[in-house]
Length: 302
Image (tube, rainbow, N blue to C red; front, side, top):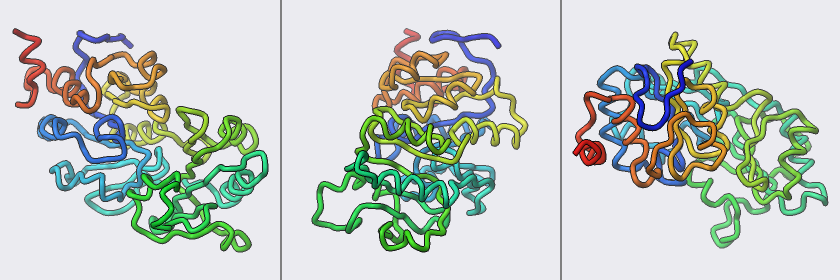
C-alpha cells in the first residue's frame, strides 16, 4: 500500500471513521461547528461516515440527528467498538460484551488494598444501567466524583456494586477505571486477558478480549464491502490507535497524543477545536469539491 504524507492527496475514500471526543467533538462535549458542513458534504458525495467512539451509542451529546448526519445507512460504534449500532433502525448490529465473570473479576481486583482509590464505572449491555464500586454514585453534593463528566453521557439507573455483587449477572459493553495506580491497567491485561486502552496508565477503558476500534472498523468495512485502502480514520487518543493503524489512511491532529501522530500517515496541522477534521475532509476526501467552510484551503491556494 502506498504511503501518503501531509500534502499528498489520498486515493478515493469511501469510508470515513471518526473519533468523537478530542477529534470531531470538543472533549466530553458537543460537535465542533466547523465540522458539520464538511461532514454533510462528504455524505452527499456518497462517503460512508462512521463514528467509532468510547461514548455510549445513545448519548444525547452525540447529537448526530440534529446535525443532519443520520440516514438509513448510518452506523455508530460505541464503547470502543463493543456495540455497533444502526441509528436509523434503533438497533444493535453487533455486540461484543464483557462477560459477567470477567467484569466481576475486575470489580473485585479494583477493591483490593493495592488498588485503593480505583473507581470502576461500568456500562451494562442493557443500555439502561451503570454499575460502579463508588458509594452514592449520583450524589449531587460530591464534587470529587471522578466520573462526573462521564455521567453526562448516561441517563439511566446507577447501581452500587456492593448491592449487586452476590447476584452479579451483568454483561458490560465497557468498564472504565478512574484514578487507578499505574500498575492496574497492565495487570488487568495480564491477569484477565482483557483489552485495555489508557493514555495515562491511571484511567483505563476495559473491553472484552480483542474488542477495540479496529475490530469495529474491520467489521463495518467487511459488511459494507469496503477495502481498508479506501478508509480514512481520524483520532487523537490511545483508544484510536488500533483504527488509525487499520485504516488505509490514518490521520492525526495537532492535539493527538505522540504515538498517534507517529503511526498516522497524514498529520493535520490543526487541533480538534481549530477544525482539524473539517480540514482533513476538505483536503483529502472532498478534494475538488471542498465545503464552503474550507477557509484554510483558500488561504493555502493563494
